Image (tube, rainbow, N blue to C red; front, side, top):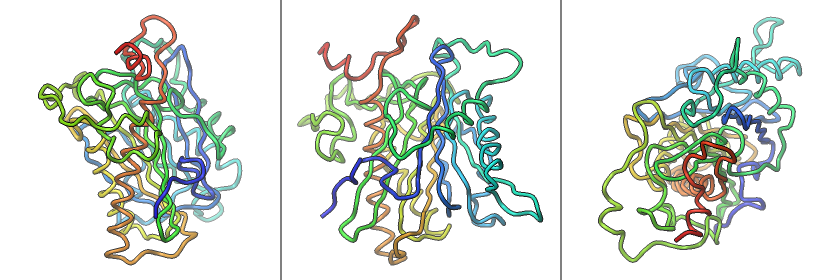
Amino acid sequence: MTAPGPNNIITDIAGLRIGNAHDEKLRSGVTVLLCEHPLNAAVDVRGGGTGTRETSALELTGAVQQIHALVLSGGSAFGLDAATGVQSFLRGKGQGFAVGEARVPIVPQAILFDLLNGGDKDWGKRPPYQDMAFAACETAAVDFTLGSVGAGYGATTYNLKGGLGSASIVTASGITIGALAAVNASGSLTIGAAKHFWAAPCEMGCEFGGFGSPAKPPPEALTPALKGGPGMSTTLVIVATDAAMDRGMLKRLAIMAQTGIARAIYPAHTPLDGDIVFALSTGSKPAPDPFAGLAELGAHAANVTARAIARGVYEASAFSREPHGPPAYRDAVKQE
């Protein structure tokens, strides 16, 4: 028997905290994942237009085997400065990879493109993402808001406002898997213009409306419709588990979790997107069997990823000032 965790968010995994900071005028923001102890982590990239920092540290051949935080940010390449803010915060607490007497926090990051969403990007001498990330660290907590917050604040999809989503599941064996997603996809999360989510078969309860799937998708829903140009869209995902996993197992978990993006967004993994999945382990529960056990957890990871993506759009709010941009999902459903 499986069920969502107590709060149905990634911090149902003990030891994780999420911090969010955003700027309404800028229409952009930062999301930070912090942990009590260094984490094993891996990454899998499927999009054609990714923007990342320190992901090479997550390769199987990397010398540094653990990370100290993860960052998701708006701002395109300008947002890559956010990880510096997190490093400054962690260094102040004496955390980091030991190099002699020095401590170097390992903070991988991925960014999404929100530069053309109508926000005021005239930030002056330097981008504000380093400061926003530091502020997100200061407010990081187990409980956090979904929707138009953090890295999801300025996000959009083909036809709806994007956002930050999360979900979790506890397996029959007691292992918890959680996902966090910043949804800025070039594709659509809904089946045509209807209220039905592509991710509906994965939904648990009514976490994104409970509308289910139509008996048969209308033909026009299968015609790919895309937002923007190359490098202007992305879905960023963090999948976490409390099962003990080394980097090789986490790489496979990330690969399988990518299926969740394809279950929630149509089309996915396009040349226009920078889709990426980070996978991490706190290691507080026993390791799964490396074959059947890992395959089972990977299937759950894909489902929880799809749910987190749908929740990000379901919980999002439209921009509050001109230009308004795409409608929020709940506003669009009310007008049906």
